[in-house]
Image 1: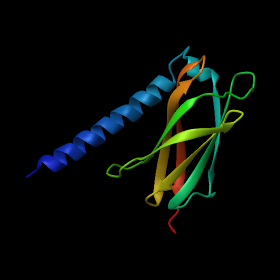
Image 2: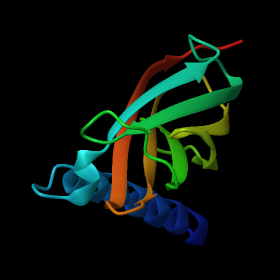
Image 3: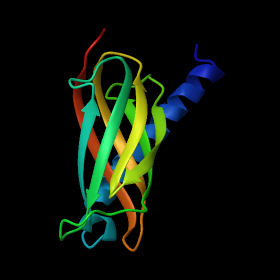
Length: 136
């Protein structure tokens, strides 16, 4: 028999899957302002491991100039259902460079959703696949 807790967990997983799907679909919409912003990233330690990690993001416009003033939200999820997401806000460190501290809770495959607003460009959304977070 399924109880209220299982229904809430299933509802949360469904909502998370829909959010990830819609975020990925919106990311490919033609003519979106956020598409004119490129994202490069690094994770430390490299390769990533269970425990604290630092995500560094660099935003640039179509001319290669740094993009500052963005408000970015980070959500790290395992690729399989059942794990609570790791959420953080990226702080601007200067010249289009942003950093967020994450705490990977389990070894395995993860993906990171970077969403937010970029000044004069609108909504921004990117997915970063982290092939494998190793155990300690």
